[in-house]
Length: 425
Ligand code: IMO
Ligand code: MG
View 1: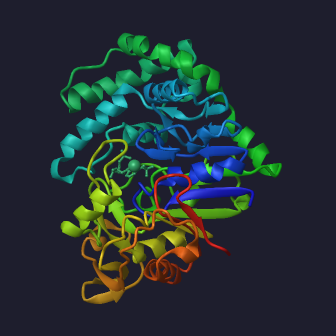
View 2 (view 1 turned 120 degrees about the vertical axis):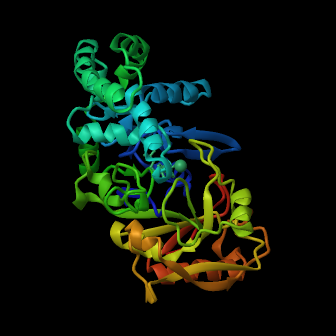
C-alpha cells in the first residue's frame, strides 16, 4: 500500500498516535493535515511515553520525513516547545518540515477562544482552549497570518498591525477586555519565529512529488470524524476536516492517490467536551472504563465521558470515510466485564433507525439499542496472536466487524508498540 490515510473513527482520543508510530516504520513521509495543538497523540516506546500535539507521530522514526501541512493551525510557542522537548530526549527533528501556508495561532486566538466559551455559558462547546476555532475563522475570513509571513519580521509586523487593529476593536468593544499590544506580541514571538524559520518549506509540492513517485506516504489524522465541521455533530465539533477527505486538502495529495483508509476506534466510546453521546454511561460502568482506560485528556487533563461502543456511529464513519480497514483498540480495558454492550441501532421518536443522524437536535433524542455479548475475564494485554484471544473477545471483534462491514485488520491490547495484533487477511 502506498498512500495511507489514518482517521479517528468517532470523537477523538482513539490512540491514533500509536498506530501512526507503528505504521511509520516503512513510510517515507508522514503528513499531519489538520487541527492544531488541540490534538494529543501519545506514543509509548519501550515504556518511554511521548505526548505530541503538533508534530507528526512519525518523528520517532529518524529516517521518516515529517510534514506539518497547510491545513494545520500552528501555535508557534507550542511547536517550538515540542521540538525542544523532543530534542531534549534525544529525538532528532532534522527531518521535519512545516508548510509556509499553514496559519499561525496567535495570542488573540487563544484569548478569543476563552472569551467566546465564557460568552456561550451553558451552551459552551468545551473546546480545548487552544485558539483553534478563532484561528480557522480568520483563515476563512482571509485575515489569517500564515507561517511564511510569520517568520519574515517585516511582513509579520505589518500584518499584525493590520489584524490587531480589528481584533482590538473586538476585544475592547464587544468583550470589554483590555487591548493587546503589537510591540509586546512581536517581542514575545520573535524568538519562536527564529526557531521556526529553518523548518519552513513548500510542503504541498514535496508531498505531491513523493506520492506521485510511488513513495509510501502516511497521512496522520488529528481529531476524528464526528468532530468534522461538516460531517460531525455540529456545532459540537472542531473547526477543521478530520475525516478522510481532509487528507487531500492542502497537503498535495490528490484524491485518486489514496490506497488505504484506516479508522482507529476503541472497543468502547469516549467523548470530551459537550454534545450528544447516545451510548454514554454516566455511571459506574463509565467510571470503570475511565479508570482502566486512563481516559483523561492528553491536552487538557479533562476526564473523558465514557460509554459502550456505538456501532451506529461507527457504521456512519465507515461510510463517509470510505474505509478500507478498521483498527479496534483498548481491548485490554474491556476485560473483566461479565457482559459487554454494542449499540446496533437507535430509537428516535418511536422509530428504530440504523443510520446515524449527525445533527445535535435529533442525536440528542436517540436512545441506543444494544446487542449484549458475553465478556471475557482473561487479561489480554500479553497476547500477540489473534487466535490466542479468548473466544468471547474474538466474538466481540467479529460482531463489530460484521455490523460495520469493514475488516478489522488490527486489534490493540495495550499502549505499547508491541501490544498490537495483526489479523490475517
Ligand atoms: P485528538 O487528535 C478529542 C474536541 C474538544 C471540543 C471540540 C472543539 O487527540 O483525537 P477545539 O479546541 O478543537 O475547538 O474543540 O473538539 N476536540 C477533541 N476531542 N480529541 C481531540 O484530538 C480533540 N480535538 C478537539 O474537546 O469538544
Ligand atoms: Mg485528544
